[in-house]
Image (cartoon, rainbow, N blue to C red; front, side, top):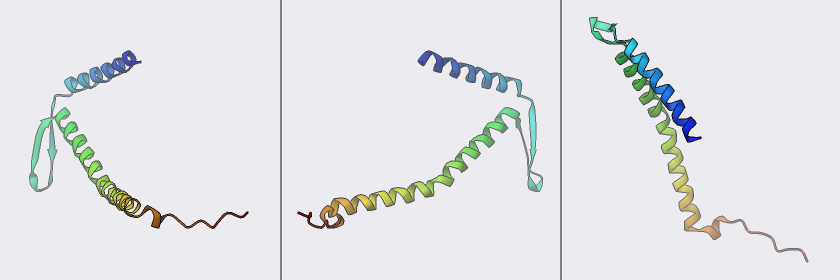
Amino acid sequence: MTALTWAVRLIIFSFLLLFAVRNTQPTMLRFVLDYVWEAPLVIVLLAFFAGGAVLGVLSVMGVIYRQRREISRLKRLTVKSPAESAPELPPPLA
């Protein structure tokens, strides 16, 4: 199984390397106020991919921190007073 995993990784890496080598022609990005950025196409694609990944991670961070606060609050509640948080059970019927 590990040999298959490494084979797939090698195929993906070689594909991406070939893609990078084949796309080295300069590309011009024109921004507002006549700002121009000229770089190889691979660098431009990598920069926008990395920017998208960073924005995706940042968009999830609020949810993660909210869940962590909720989990720590619930842990404090259960550790502080487990007997108080457990509901009272009626006595068994004889």
